[in-house]
Image 1 (cartoon, helix red, strand yellow):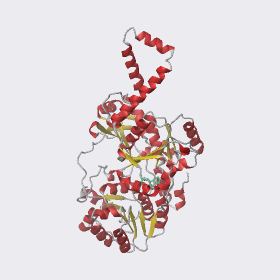
Image 2 (cartoon, rainbow, N blue to C red):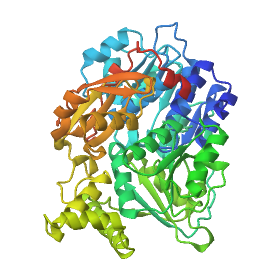
Image 3 (cartoon, rainbow, N blue to C red):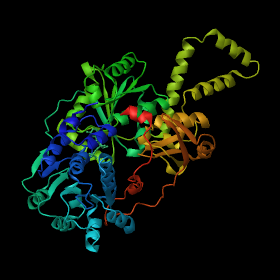
Length: 566
Ligand code: AMP
């Protein structure tokens, strides 16, 4: 399939990787930054996290690097270890067919590991300023071959006191190198830095125009990335939307989310750019006729379609900018009807949310994620409501006969309670009054979860819904026993309630996947130790899997399913 990325004149290795990531079109910042950087300009770009800024510089870097030379050719400086790992992973994904070695270097990780990576010939180094400086001082990192430098989240780096290190590092790079500076804000110190180190940089900022927003109730929930899916299902259970569009950033995310929702018992389906127009229309017809209530979509797929007014628009992924936000939420609250617009925001995306709010001249209302108790109470009430409706409309004769027969053995109250239990369990929801399962709680209780690892991931077309289906069936457990499912390139981490972990390993360790099977084993458990920081005064960060291990070349063959997906 041709996407607008194909028009940017990128190497086929890169468009192939972008296709696999499910990006359908360049984000506004990418539309401007990629051509400018590929034409050799320096750029200063005002772009917070969430706008696609990483790919905006990673794509031109991958275009530039000559993998046959074993020298450091590009350097990205990022304020935190978390961001350095994230940028390294994203760059690795984009350059996966380019034979480019990407190495994250950050404080808190043993030097030996980083030294090995540097000796092996890293082409792109992504590091925190403190650790990069340490390597320069030790003579383990030379920057005289660098052709491209990026300062990512420059304002954060300056706020954290890295200015001296940054200047010392930039002084080590050759004068002819190209440079890109990304920052959410542009205070005078950033402008001074740009003046000192950059050659007539092009300034890039996504145009901000005042936006007209319908009178829709607009709220946001702050949630960690890993708790997003549970947050979504809790919100769905609380709000019980009559019809909702759930927006995702990529087609793979849309497909995965729809299958996860189906596995958890929701009437959901996806529309995205990988599907033919006819197939999209078919899904849309199901949505229009209320056969499904949740439509999981990407912006591009939703754009050309005549989608009816919906009760809820849910931004599972925050949109790139105010334009996209207004476009998305315009699907609800039409013609004076009441509409709900809900946006999930990770802590890193809060700045992007502020930019959107500024552009639409409106503040979104922050809400607390529902707790397990809220959701359980809501489920009970709506279940009772359904039951009342059925009782009022009169139960059919066969049911009356069953009740009469049981009445010879049990009291009417006992019969009713048993029937309610059976019916409630059939909904696939946790039993009423059960202790909050960790996976269902808006605030996940890690102590109750066990992490398993499956020896297959994205490259074999693994989808969370497939794992839940196979394991739930073989182990005889409900979907609610699953926590976060983190699909990586060649492995998938599956969180399950600790009480069912051994049952799963005994009965369901072989998982049926689209292209064959995978094997589940116990994963190395995450340590409870707080992540160490590169520098005093940094915020504590989430633990991340060691990025290097993911960068090893995979020997896994592509599955048919995965090929078909592309
Ligand atoms: P960033 O602002 O670089 O942190 O990117 C935010 C998220 O957007 C990441 O999850 C990217 O994978 C995703 N992303 C970047 N570019 C695109 C694109 N053109 N289409 C869809 N998703 C994208």
